[in-house]
Length: 117
Ligand SMILES: [Zn+2]
Ligand SMILES: [Zn+2]
Image 1 (cartoon, helix red, strand yellow):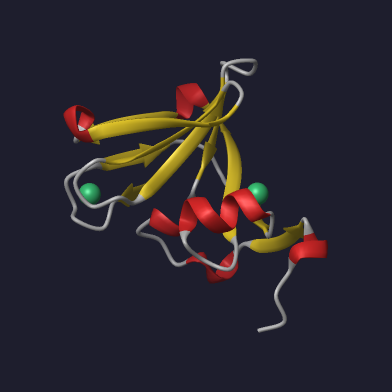
Image 2 (cartoon, helix red, strand yellow):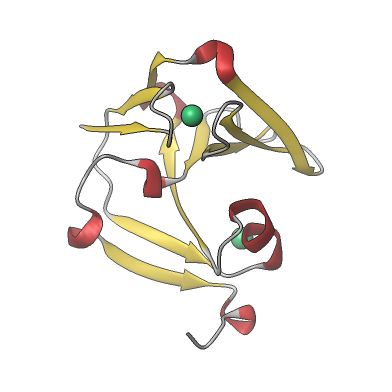
């Protein structure tokens, strides 16, 4: 069980499944969406995601065909994404978990775009 929140604290949520591995995606779309060198993502079951507060602030953008990115409309934190073709899963953005992330294993994807930082 994990809890997460956006930067301004208005949106809070709970994740009721164990996360084993976090993927760091270096693709150009993630770089733009997160305004960062890469994004972190983990696929979870939609049913294990519970919104605690801030439902009225959630905004969505269809960043590519049938893929929606969900963020806090007040502070802009990107919280999760989903594809209409996969309604039973969410792509959580674990950087917003209020949890020590250092224990998770990390996998890098789209490394051809990876910056040498
Ligand atoms: Zn916020
Ligand atoms: Zn990506």
